[in-house]
Length: 187
Image (cartoon, rainbow, N blue to C red; front, side, top):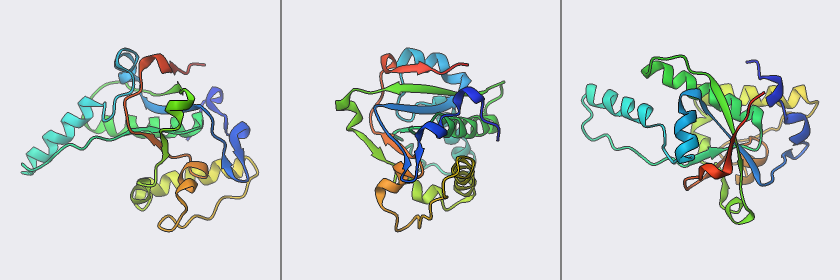
């Protein structure tokens, strides 16, 4: 995976303890969602087209009991990591939705009060046990190696909850984020 140069920020953020955090966060998504995000902000479970496709798929296979869950807004402290997740979003959408979509990254600036609501995404442990998660762990290892820092050894089932934030760059915000807090990152 080639990360655009203007999004490469791990060199400034990565330390022996992991990724530093502050009040600035990033969210990776599809270019198809830019206008909706600019108007409405980042909404939990906000990709209505992908949610509808999942619902239709479940109905097609006869699962009439399918219930949508409300996902939080997933964040990371690195533009590089957000770009990785943006690419994953584009891949998922291509399975169900036609169109020329590109990965994009939004910058999120939070007040101290809002920033205190950002939580480590320990729920990612289950994701990290499947192929998609293995790919992410390999991507993370590459970032550490590229920056001359030892790849952290993490037992995903026994890891300290802060390891998901600091070492893996996985966080969430369990509320919608207003558009006034967002900026689309461009070259």
